[in-house]
Length: 378
Image 1 (tube, one colour):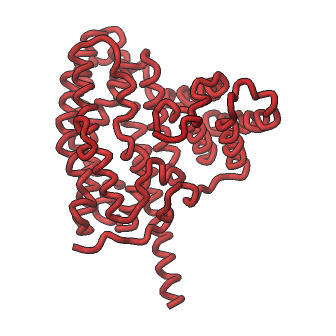
Image 2 (tube, one colour):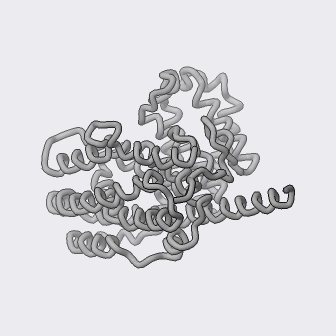
Image 3 (spheres, one colour):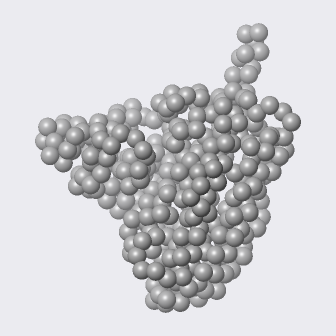
């Protein structure tokens, strides 16, 4: 069994994400700094006049980015800027056990306006990629059952094959860094939709959350297993420690989940999306586990995947049989929204997965160049 200690090529192991590389245009980088300044402003809503020049410049860039990303259809840097700003607002819905003053603007009307401005354009753009009218004509129960059967064990994509057969240890570390964005706070957004009337659907969702949270034991919480994988490589295990490595496609998945959990009108969309996530999860985790085994990594360096394969196979059945199908029966006129949520989650997850593999390959290329330079120096 080889040592798991490796040099992480892109993000130096440290206590904060600022030492990672974030390459964006000067315009968007400057606007994000302005947004951060506004976010940290005490009593922001009553200080907007005092910050008028910053607000104006930020809003000009925001409109420009929305046009570039969702109207003109170009610019990954615009997508990244918008999703980072949106996440900066959405993350205030969770508690991070940090300085309480970070939440002073949690209910800011201005931040709500910025969020809604981005979400309106972004969600229209996302929905335009799906034939919503066709979904409304489906036999929902049949569509969900067929989709779940297909996604439980799908054919290997080129990205899956690369991970299984070619990804290096450096690439594996890069995968962990990006995946830690969700893996270290796993299940947090699910917690946002559990309150309300008691029934079998609610209790099933609570069971899923309890297993994600180790039934209340930190040592069994899924994020603890993810943290252990990162620790095997000497990586930073703080939440958001590698935020600057996260592609916009991954951020979009998180922000979409914030949207559909915070607005209860989207409860069916969220339930359909979570059904896909739990059904399809084991297939993705098998790819990562296969890669770790090929690389002869330690048990601790792959334990999270093994745990998830076992538990998500069960969660997928629960979500289909005890959540999605009962909801389809309870809401026959709106049941198509379950399929919309399922298909959106699949589309966005596939897009994110492809972006992660591109990022892994770039990191591996950088690692290879570093090794070549070190050889020349020695």
